[in-house]
Length: 379
Image (tube, rainbow, N blue to C red; front, side, top):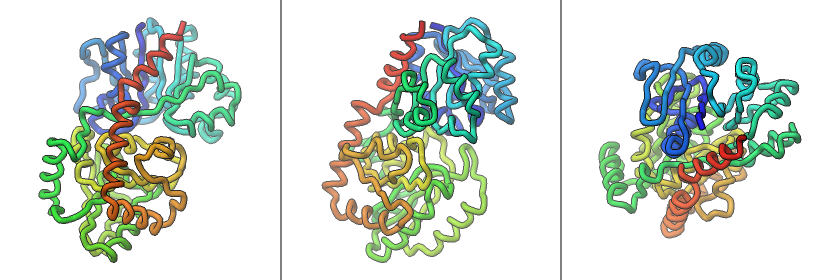
């Protein structure tokens, strides 16, 4: 088949500036391209050419300061010879592309609550659902949300959990993981500390302040704890807003070490997981299912996360971490961090189980197999 993948408008593919959807596309491309001819449409970037071909994958990058401008530019250059167009996270674009290509098969990959009434009208949502061949979602939480609003979508929905690159993330019990850990601990003067690690955007809904307050309390009990926060306000840059300024001010009240790495490209982030003894995701919003969970599992880290949105779906009952219900309470995080630090054998086994799950289930080959199965049903 000749298949087009339409990425969202925010960041380019490959994922040189980060982005969960962009990394998702990077992960599945080698497997999809082994079976089909793939064209990836994404937004332009000064470090990337407007068009290039790598193997069986063609990349077409167009300008787009807004979503409307971006999809309009794609419509100007997209050919009428695709067997399937797979749209990422923008159901409205299904409708827009249908105007131009009324007979081309279209499918949808949902990574957020994009069928919420504030994002799409009832009429347009129903049209999209009827138009697409299938709808893959990154979590049961997202699938259930769509089905609750639009029961007609039930037979088109399929949960396809995301993944991490098992060759890229090296657990700290491996020789490469130990080397990464040693080099980074030396770089940040953390040789004698247990590290609580957080990776992701700096945003109030991500709960960085909750974790900082938890570790602040923890530092009153243990003097060997440090906090490392990997990420920035937005992908690809280190812009500062009022929230990031408030985190910097809060950091001054911690009695132990705290490191803000700022933005790191995806190619560097994998080694930073080796710094951690415990990984903490403190989402305060109904997160679709943050990809950092897969990364932490691949790196063999025990996880603490919140029961918000789909996050708990890759932790509940899997013996790879702890899910917090009292997600607004720093003490809930502190108590669970203490538990894992005080019980290193349990923490180690959680990390081992997370790595095993990644090798068996949460890897890009399995994601691609799920997608290929869906593609094969398109007639």
